[in-house]
Length: 125
Image (cartoon, rainbow, N blue to C red; front, side):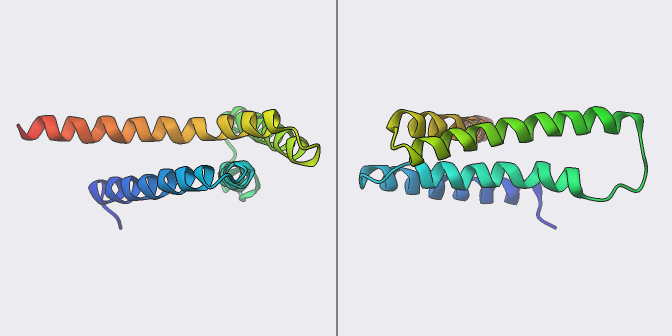
């Protein structure tokens, strides 16, 4: 089992590689559609697994949880449709809008990782 500290180290390395790859990809003049599509696929895996996985016990809160998961899946599919429409009709604004919407959660995780790193460095002083 991976400890919490090692999990944060792995997350930090993954974030550095992700942002480095995004910067290189965009600076090379390539469309951000591939990055947005990759992130949308990642965002869709967990809710779909949670919806389709068999449940041993039935709890009244499961209905509310399923409703929340359906909302997340609909939102991700809407952004995916936005991305597909932008690519199919060659509308750069739609592609960039979908890209920005898919990168926002990664930005939030990155800010959290930076905050955690700064708090660790402040405790060492």
